[in-house]
Length: 143
Image (cartoon, rainbow, N blue to C red; front, side, top):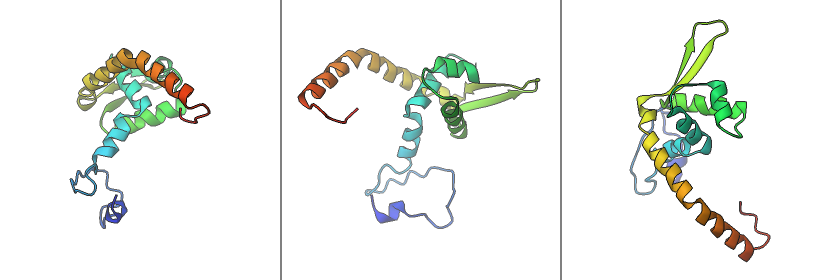
């Protein structure tokens, strides 16, 4: 990565838009930010769950094994900020909130499903490869 790539461009500090620059010395500019979001495990699991339709917060939390309330809150807020999830607050007492995929978020579901299908198809082989690696490299810290 070049020094100019890590610097803040004058006048754009805090800018929310992504700028795919395509420069030869940093071709991932703009791509990494999106992939970091849609590729993290919690975002993928939220998208998978919302692909089945709108869900309330507790429904999401129960459906996604191991996610804390704080992590789910951060994940849906980030997905909402990125325009992938729509949060709707209903004027009831107490207030009811649901989450649903936007059109952009819904367009990800076939990709996420393909990744999930691939994972299911190859998980046994990956588990065998890990066991083999671990037995060939005792005491390794890779997990």
